[in-house]
Image (tube, rainbow over all chains, first blue to last red; front, side, top):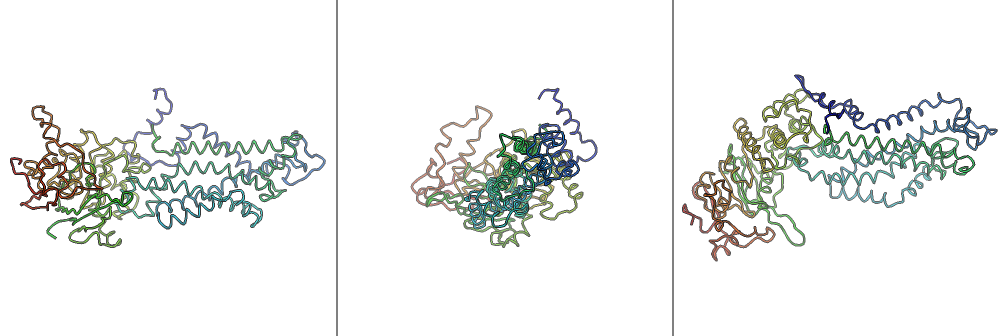
Length: 304
Length: 322
């Protein structure tokens, strides 16, 4: 590294210990490093924050409600009254975008989180225990993966009916198996390392080995999976909504808006283009943030 | 059970190796550790040293044979009984890069045995103990919250040693603890090990293929060849007058700095170590032994005891090397 590297100076200053005991790495220093190393990740975080704020403050930000129809102004192009125009029912697109972001953000994050936790727990137990436990869990995962995921989601949604909670459930059920597989293979690799053997010889109980040695070493993989799961969840929800199984109109979600807007793609392109752009933005933001986090959390890269 | 702290009896370990084949890693080996000694275990790569060392502290289950700790059968203990004595055993690994969890700080690494065996509780108290241990092995306390990859090999090995002694064990199996280190660092680590042994009354089973290292640190030495012990005895005596031909070849193979003292190449051993999947009959060394006769190929030599020394050879060498 050249001497004029701005990051290096910062590291050296914070590396001084002095008389006091060194402090453990807190949340703060992780954020600090993220900010120092990866501007893109910080920008992505800001974008996500912006979307979250917009979702929370939706009713304050707009004079309309998302279900309010105005048949005299159907499909009107963007104008000062309707910044993003109106849809086929004369509803304000911006308003529907704001309210829809609530659904889309929740659908992106919640099922990904649930399937991540479920998949990681089952994957680690499966890899660590081996034998019959492993066989049962993995065959179950195979079963889930063998079904076309869309079909599986449709079956569950048909059975349970539409609605947010059911979408959460469906997406979690569809996604856990992939996570479990990847985490299991990571676990099998980690189990063979000498540091796990060292822990075993020390007498560390199995549960603790899974929690303190295997799980932390799976985190980078899981972060990547997590950020990849978010966009796919948002997209699956939009497909489900398109098929009439997800969010039911007149409720709004980005996926639903893209799909209903498709019929007017040539006459009123803003109907689907605007929500598409929003989906792309949030998906990219999560991906970049995940990338940045994985880098910063990797101890090998620290203080280089 | 004759005054041994830890004693292995007729230990055998076989690993499956494909169709109807087994690797005979260790065959009917008996080994005793006297309290407070350092027993060196030497032999070529793949002769079963590490396997034997791991079986001795129940890190690996033997195919047959028993281990006794203070005359109590370690191998026959239930999980609960073993948990109660587990604290007495630890291990130092060869590769200080692989044996420390890359995602744990030095503090957490050294605290792990303390927490596992409930030696102290409370964050502050544990941190204090960790600092004491770091001081004892010569790692500056400033590095408490650093990660393993930020250290050099020697320092990592010191951290590994701090972990090993944290729970005040009685027996430590050192599996090639200095083989991965620079020669200059090896000496420091060996001195640290001797130092800790004196202060904490430890017993070492010191596994190594490096004869000069073993000579430096061991009180007694055991020479292994292909899953068998061929000779054992006090280090000085074995060095002065090896009784088993294999030992004598091993000692002659140690490189010497002075060219005049170098061994005539014709006196060095040739050929490869036989396969442990299909070990030779009789004496396992007979295929490479220049003194081998018919009896060596047919009959397995028993371990014979002569005073403090044992040797497994039909025709042990006398002092003149014949």
